[in-house]
Image (cartoon, rainbow, N blue to C red; front, top):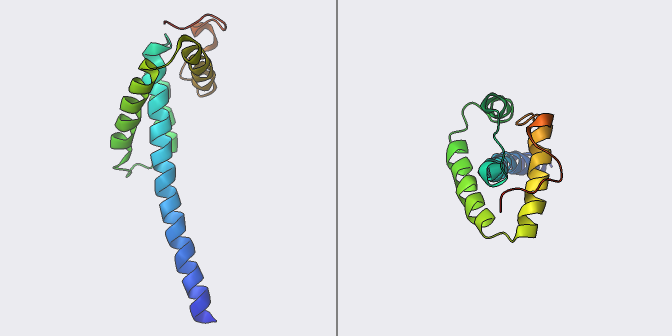
Length: 118
């Protein structure tokens, strides 16, 4: 019984570590897409807000974050270039909402309903 509990504990610890790594990867890739959208969606993010957001959400010793963020930005730029006009409008509308919710932009930095650059 002790061996079974020990085995379960090891599995949970390994799964938790893998989950934390995936979480960091997913976070970097998603943030990369948002940052890649800045120009395409005609926004200028407040760099201090982005820096603070990263400091609050990324472990100081996460050496994979910069590489994963860069990959997310590269992939995001490529995907955005392929968007139709409607897809870009939908994408940019949500990116504006995300950026506003995290303080990357402020309320007066854009007008809702104004389409992003084609």
